[in-house]
Length: 406
Image (cartoon, rainbow, N blue to C red; front, side, top):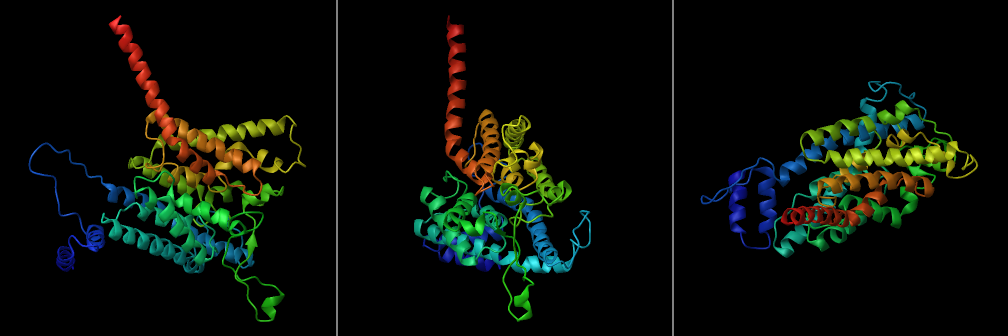
């Protein structure tokens, strides 16, 4: 196989198809080129492919849990199983849940990778550059941050838009100014808002048992409110803190289990793939904003009749357990391309992501999830943050130089 692929690569070397064969060759096998024989070279085991593979490894547990949760929400909505009380409850980790989740989630993954990588190959052939590994992570992120019942054609259109407009027009991987996965989700939100948010969100691929079932008709799905949706509508939360922490709640495919996201975040920090500074500062920013809102409600400035009260009065730490805040902080705020590059800048960058996320949640009841907009906003300001950090450092050095000269 390796020899045949090598022969094809040599046959089409220098043609439009060369990037395609190089991509398959380097994906399946280690590159067969090394640093030159002359001069000094610093060798490192880390390259773009290994970094991307590490992030994908950290996303796989979220994907698997999301499949189980999809089936669990289905059968729970039908009343066929009881609500789980333990992370190891067999009523959650059973084959029926996983089978249903696999059937619903796998097409999202295939569409994401099929459309996204297809466009990557086309641009590589047209421009004559190598196929970049950046979309390997984006392709996995996209199905994890959308509702499980999003129509496949909508996802396909959004992926095409995100790859072309969000990345390729800027020059490809490493040149984009916005996170591609969030660009795709933003396109879905603004183009098809009723499918993405509001007081009702499509959360399962269930069959609604009503009078139409008796007549032989079956509906596609059951609509139900997420935790954020309940709070935004002024309702009481019907899920315990334990359910929110473990992820036994409705929501986008892979962002519900805070405990799994936390463990995988530690894994990314340990492997030095993600910035712990951004993660910590984003958590601090969210907690600070939550504390401010809790203070406002405790002083009586906002009454329970106000539409903001539900999310304002939510315990400040509980914002990290619901919605996509934890997922966004760990997997997308830490994107090394679109985030701040300086160490001090990462602290400010992460802090404002957490701070603004909770602010948007509270003040925008129609869209009670703010992490997407917060990260995209800070993607735009990341270069500005780095600029002022560098300018500050240069000014300090100039002052020291003047003092020594004097």
